[in-house]
Image: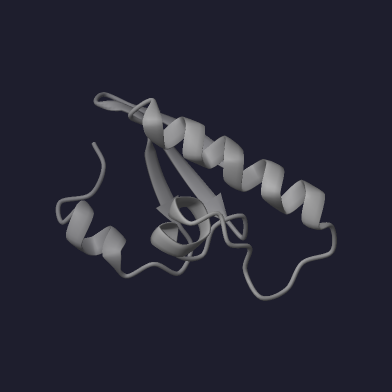
Length: 74
């Protein structure tokens, strides 16, 4: 994951840690493939905490990002 500071807060480019936020972070369901389940779940739990702190999560394959941030994250 890559943390980027923007004027409105922190944006987290989640990469392969989070494909679809509602499923992976919201429901804490890992994606379909992984090497180490313990590490995947730790990353998803971290993203859930970051979301609750108001940070922007930018999953790698989630079309909802365009609806949540139509003008981008600034």
